[in-house]
Length: 415
Ligand code: C2E
Ligand code: MG
Ligand code: MG
Image (tube, rainbow, N blue to C red; front, side, top):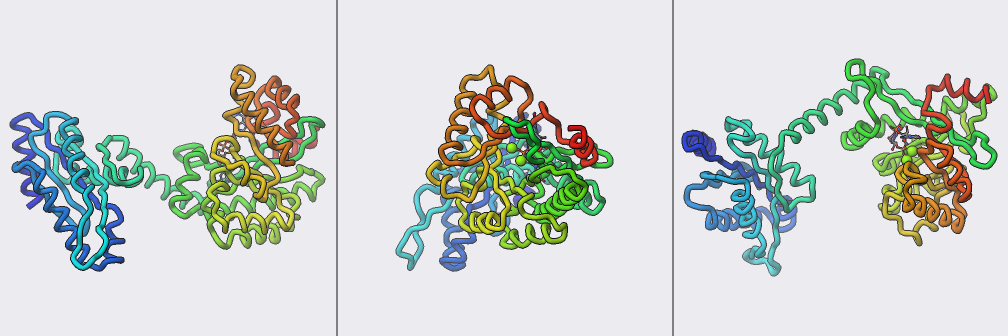
């Protein structure tokens, strides 16, 4: 029936030169109602919701339930986007009054996530319009639920790109397309080399190099981060051990750890295994965890970090200043180092606010007795400013870009 009505609406609209809005609606957390109150309560909610919506939709519009808690409304005679927004606002408002269930003491609240596609703007046939409305609904879910989104072409591009990247990344692991580059970290007073950060690179045979900023989030979402994380840790430990054995003391090897890796209850064992198989001592390993990850306050994350720190591994807080650190909490965390985010370094000396933020972070580090490293240092002026404020270490293009292992060896031996 929905398909027939849609076909008719599209034909009618193209004759009248009006638009049709396909409104894809999914109730939020409907499963919880079924699970907690039982299926007959769930059924009753679905009926009540449908009734409320039917009462507010104009007679020419249609409403269908297409599966479990999914509805599609067809809005006809649409002349403007604002007309559609208005209609959707009314659908959402209709849910604001709570629902009563027979035999239940407490009323139930429910919200919906809604995606909209427009004929002819977002597609000319039923299948495409439904798919695009569905995609927009997913976006509404992603962006916090109880909201609506209009379909945009970028959503399809983004969805395609995501799928492509997730598949290609899986192959990349098997095809050995991932490798590490290393960026030196230096002591600002002595200018001695104190460490290296391992940074992941993906060289795709056709697409060229793909940035970690793009593929790490996809690895996290698709669960591949566990395997990738193991690869990075092993590789970085083996490389560091091999340098040490050849008289190249690069200091500590800093390895980036993403939130998803820390959530793995096996994480401590993964790190220990990397140390054991490579023979690297924990004193040469540092783990970089972002501020956001640490401040999530997941106790199990902190416990794992404490255990790792206990065996001599250093923990540093990456991208410091970009999250929302609770300063009183900071002191209780198992951390050795704060990494001032590049955002606060890049506009020194033009931006006085950034300089004030750097100074404040440095003062904080001194007060709490935590080492500070500035990342993204590109000019001598930046290095001078940081040194004058007693920043301990720096990393950035001024000293070296991230480079291949072989180049690190050469750079080190030239020093
Ligand atoms: P990050 O850990 O904050 O790494 C610093 C980023 O700044 C690196 O980008 C580095 O190449 C870049 N950078 C260093 N010095 C300068 C400079 O002077 N100027 C400028 N403009 N940029 C500089 P990259 O390598 O693209 O990495 C981006 C992010 O990807 C990293 O941020 C990190 O969050 C993530 N990442 C990289 N490798 C890994 C990894 O092995 N595992 C995980 N979980 N994340 C990784
Ligand atoms: Mg880092
Ligand atoms: Mg950083």
